Each structure stands twice: as structure tokens, then as C-alpha cells.
Length: 513
Image (cartoon, rainbow, N blue to C red; front, side, top):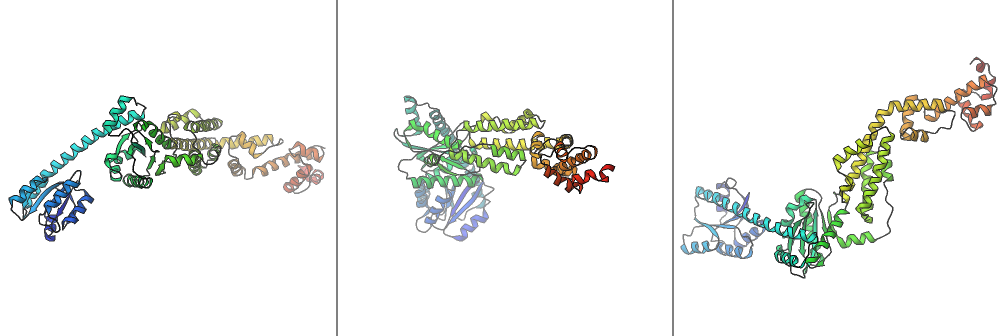
């Protein structure tokens, strides 16, 4: 929808034009009304309308002077229509020299005005489309030149041609700006012109479709630069309704520095983990934070433990903390890839131990997240690791549920057969590929007793049989049923059987059994 603004010193005229004309039908929306020259000038500079309808006789300075000032001050002034009660050829001739489309006499005929607005809507829309197309072509040429410079093409002749077309003096001070996510590309160039002079910026788009700017920064103070880029980042977030990160390179000299500028931007983008982390990131500050302090060893051990334990809610926070440390200490992408590959190997081993199919698990994960070797930045590597752990945890839970009935039956049968040997819940859990705490819960659910209670009852029942049928010493009986400490055996026997082993051995009750 095109924007229109009306100027008249009579409020009833403004109200009549607002109500009488079907602006939307003609392709316009009213963006403002003014009663005098200065107010009109302020509103036009603020709203940038496509069409201004103005009376000639307005306070402070008249409508013709308003048009003259706007034509002189604006790079792309609006179109104008004069509404006047003066049928004066001199006024009309002056108006026609000032990019005025029509000179209408008051009272304005409604049908005549709407017909004029319809024709102007078509003309202005076509003009805007033509300008946009020309700017896109020019931006495409400049973007192509910058991309060739980014790739390292800087032979003398090409550099001269590029400098000329991009309009960069040979010794220009330059810095680069890169915005992420790629959806910022459609807005960056337009917003940049509201933060920095248009003649100092040129835009590009890299192979990953991220939007960037090359800014001639000489004469721009650090404070002004930071304020402009912060404003740019905030406006992008308002438009996109999502976090936007803006990376800023160091200042460098000459067009031959374009590749190095881009490499700095790319380095920051790769080592910025969270896609949800918006803000402005300066390369100089980024390097200082990376040099501070020694490097800690970052491993995926804690994350693997979360997966084993099935703690799904803890996986994402754990991944975030890991990549915060990676980013803080500036680990290379290759080092992070190696760590994730080791994590993959451990998760595949776990799946195999649970009688699962590691290849099927990894195939499903890679279909959703891509191949590890193709991921070249922290953000995508973090998402990959998080997805991998959630996939593995869900798959291991399925395998555990499928094996649950058979597994606990096999555990109980194993305890029944091997109770005379040294048995520990932790070792059984490892042997049967289960979480110890979960095995303990399942054991109680299936038998009605804790693991240690069940094991002691089993051993005491066997001890009763030996006491009844043999002449073995109490210490020998204890050893044969799995107790290494005789005193402990006697204590447990009395607790379960209600009498000491010696009393049980000599009682009539034991003989009857």
C-alpha cells in the first residue's frame, strides 16, 4: 500500500478529504495530516510518503516552497498534487516545474480526485518497481564483486575494476558486518541506510545466504559505530521476531583486506553456539575473551551419563553448557566434531549392548540433522549433538521397554543360580545393560523385596537346608551360601529366621524341615 499525506490550513478540508475519498480503493493509505509548512516538512521526512496533496496558501511557508524544499533535500521526493482555490496561471506554471502531477481547483470533485489517485497509484507503483529492480541489479553486481574478493581474487586489474564499481577509494578504511540468521538478508541493506550514510555501505550475501555489509568506517567513532550497529541489530529483531546476531570485524585498510574481514566474521559466526543468542559481537572483544585464562578440557562424559540415565530434560542444558565452554575457549570446529564423533561411537555401543541396531539409529538421526562432517559452525553442531542425544535416549528407552520383561526375569534367574557367589547390584546392572537405580526399582516391583533383601533371603533359605542336612560348621555354611563374614551371616540369619543358626540346627523344627 502506497502512503499519502495531505496539507491544508483548514481542518474541515482535511476532514473532508479523509472521509470523502476512498484512499484504500485507490491504492493509498493516509499516513499524516499537516496544517502548516514546517509541520508538513517534519511529517514528510518522518513518514516518507509516496504522494503529497497540498494547498498553496498554508502558514509559515506556502505549498510551492514546501515542494521546492523537499525536492532539494530528499534523494527520492514524493509526487505532489496541488489543491488550491487560486486559478492563477503563474501558480500552475511554477507547480509544473516542481514535479507536481496535477493542479486541482477547490472545491475538489470527488470522482476527479479518485480517478487521479488511481492513475498515480499505477505510475508510482511502476516507478518503485523499476527503481527496486535497478537497485537489485546494482546490488547483485556489487555482491558478486565482493564475493570474488572474499574468495581471494585480488589481482591488480580486477581490484581496480572492483574499487571503481563499488566506489571504494584505494586506501579506504573498511570493516565488515555479518547478520545471522539468513532471513535478515531481505532487510539488512534497507535498514543499514537508516543507520549509516548510503554512500558508505555496500551489501553482499555469502554462499550460506547470510547477509553482510562492507562499511567505509573512516571518521566514524567507536561510540557512533556501536550505536549504529546496535540500532541495526535491534531493528532486525523487531522485524524478524527472533534473535539476530550481528558480527563486526576489525577495521582494516584497502579493498585487498576484504577477504581477511570476511574470515574474521566467519570465525565469529562459527564459534557462536546458540542460535538463540542475539546481540552485537565485535571481533576485537571476541579475541580478548578467548585469550583470557587457560583452556579447560571439555568432554561429553556428563552428557553421555544423562543419556544413559534417560534424563531427557537435562540433555539440552548440558549441551548448552558444553558449547558455552567450547565457544569461550575457542575450540576449533574440527575439535568439536571429533568430540561428537566419540560421543556417537559410545552411543552406538550402548545401542548394540541393548540388542539394538546402531546403524538404524544413526540413519534416522542423520536424515533429520545431516552428516556431522558437513556441519561447519557451533550452532549447527550444538543442534546436532542435542538431537543425537535425544534420539539415542529415546531409542535406548524403547529397547529397555521391549527388553524389560525378559531382562528382569533373566536377572532374577541369574541371582537364583549365582547367589552363592559375590553379587552386587552395580555389577548386575552393568552386565544386563541397565541403569542401577532403575534395576533396583524393577527388582522390587517384580519380587516385592529390594535386591539385597532378596539375595539375603535366598542365601538364608539355602543355609537352612545345609544346617538341616549336613554337619558343617556354621562358618562353613556361611561361606557356602555366599557370606564372607560369619558374624554378618549369624546376624542376618537371626533377622530372617528368628533364631540363631546354632539354635535352628539343634531344634526339632529344623529336623522336621
